[in-house]
Image: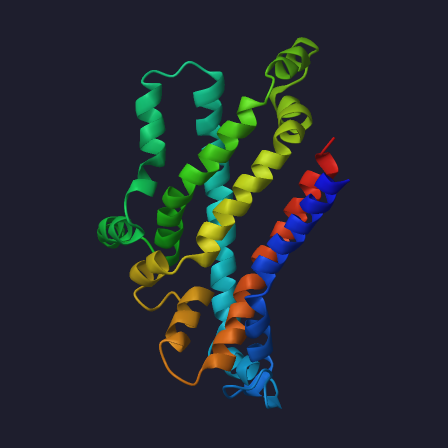
Length: 258
């Protein structure tokens, strides 16, 4: 009984730890004026939201969504294929391959972006596609790690039995692999989406100021003074999609828990 109470209290404290910093942002997003040391805004309004919309928040939101979805769509299957090869098959120089896959984490994003940006410019690749490609490279170590954990608990004998019963490769993938690996795939996709959605450095360098995402727009307004309502409104827009996806991921894993 005491252990359960402590566990519940710990979960409540953990939730509060993450949610309390969001309270000032939410208040600022609907405030026109909030002077120190007042505990609440003196004037409520949607000035920040209107300013954010007029500054191109919708286009920035769409750009961030494209980056996040594209990176997730590329990095998740790439990480799954790499993890499957490393866990379930014999791979020559397995250690070297694993090091290469996690190598992007060893270098600062600024250095990676600067190096690949030169190649992208010389190849004439559009800014958006170039940013997606670089961010996919950054995300693959995360997706590979998550999928290695998933394949570590995966029993390949289910596949072998399905093929013995005459199942095609597509049926094996759809009816065996996907259901068993769904939690790992969802987690890997979520992390890859975050890499694209929250990126600032790569988007700024590769885009050259022409590719404006939500983090880039937040950074532009945060660099000035007196823009707290706009920054808060944009920050809420930046937080909302990952939070919704996290809740969906939580529900998915909860339903599959024994």
